[in-house]
Amino acid sequence: MADEKASVEDIAPGAIARAADITDGIAARIHRPVLLDECVDLLLPAGRRPDPVIVDCTLGLAGHSLAFCEAAPAARLIGIDRDKEALELAARRLSAHADRFTPVHASFARFAAVLDELGIDEVDGAFLDLGLSSLQIDEKDRGFAYSADGPLDMRMDAAQPLTAADVLASYSVDGLTRVFRDYGQERWARRIAQAIAEQRQREPLEHASQLVDLIDRAVPRRNRPAGNPAKRVFQALRIEVNGELDELRSVLPQIALRLAVGGRIVVESYHSLEDRITKRFFVRGSRVDMPRGMPQIPEGLRPYFRDVSHGAVKAGKDEIAGNPRSGSVRLRAVELTLPLPPAVRNEMLRDIELAEQRKEKRR
Ligand SMILES: C[S@@+](CC[C@H](N)C(=O)[O-])C[C@H]1O[C@@H](n2cnc3c(N)ncnc32)[C@H](O)[C@@H]1O
Image 1 (cartoon, rainbow, N blue to C red):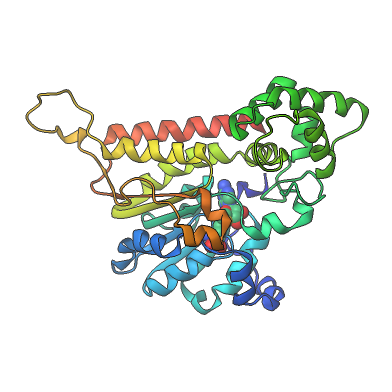
Image 2 (cartoon, protein in one colour):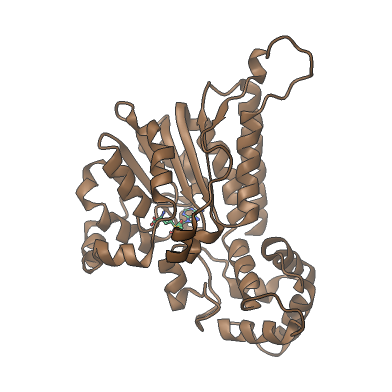
């Protein structure tokens, strides 16, 4: 995969100049940062230390990062994105802070390697705003939207080999059923998978409209849930193509292992499975797990996270009305309160290894 190697110097000044016609106003209109004030308030206590390092793992169009830079004038910001185009636009938007901003073209699952390449041992804050930016959804030829007849691509990193068309052409009926059911909670997963297996013998599925029509024929009209029946299948395919859940399972422990005590992790999820992974990871570190009746908590069992968001924060009615994308957001944040005990470090290293093995299998 192209994102095997992070490219810190890749975002050339020429690329930034090419994006010069994209003004802050246009970028702000195409992607509105979700729960912006809440994210700044939750992340930036970490940015008040002298020379803090903040990593935005999903830079996108830098809506959140711009606010982080403004609220933490002493902070160094590392902005990671696997989408080169987004990175170029973000670099342009952050040009006023260019002296303390480093754009990195990589998957955030390479978090530890990116820090190594930059010579950074510890970070004070890490932020994830998962999923797609509005720019990606709106770009017809990226194939993310069921409403636009683009090619069935769906790669966030255009240099990655696996596309949605490849998944549709090569996965077994069982494999497709699992993807649609697990990642899209699609009730008619098997029926749709069977219809795909039949249709691909006649012609390859290459365009969004072919898949939309196929789903429309496969899903019974009676008792159809509200909305376009293709929505859940498109979401599921996107999660599979980009390995999104394993990327998240891999990055959370990588961040925790490089977080300074007092540092924070802030995550915005838009899918229940992403939120479940984040919640489990945070809860594991913020609860005491010891037998009843013990007079005091042994050293290695003390909670190492403090839940600073007090569970999941949701968007309010007004924000949802102005930005429907915020309707499904769940924002969670923790602070590291003590150095990770050796047993926890080992467990996290194992989890990273497992997530990497699962990603490897998909390739
Ligand atoms: C919701 S957008 C972020 C928007 C950003 N917070 C803003 O305000 O402009 C998510 C971004 O994360 C990127 N992304 C998603 N998964 C990624 C991964 N595994 N590694 C790196 N970037 C990823 C996407 O390419 C997209 O640009």
